Length: 144
Image (cartoon, rainbow, N blue to C red; front, top):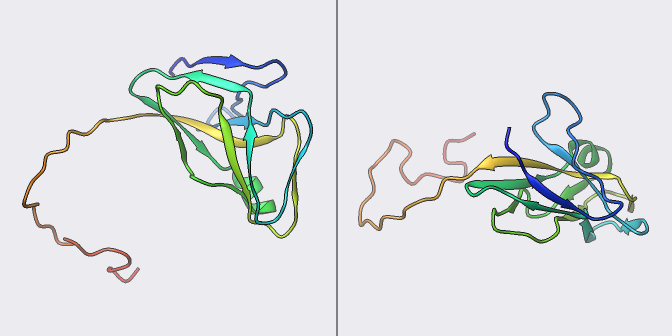
């Protein structure tokens, strides 16, 4: 378990794991009044949370499967990445792909946050790459 330093605005809620085995902690909307997301619309939903990640970690923001299945609510730029040097408020890019308008209420569970280690790459320019069985085949080349 890693320790995450978190600043929370008055009235906002800390992330919560909903079960012992949950990978993601739910993030809650922090709103003065409900927000209506019309069909096909995208809005930015604040959480009232600010985090300080240890270097070498990222936070990923992911959709909630129940909102996706029941209402067609998903997140653009998913998974969204929060870098270890970002100190701004966590805001969620929520899109309504459903058939009806969707109302986001204060303290509604709107997304989940997952923490991962990050490896940096040392890019080495090369004129040649090793061949493989697949080689440059892509975009459905295997027929599956």
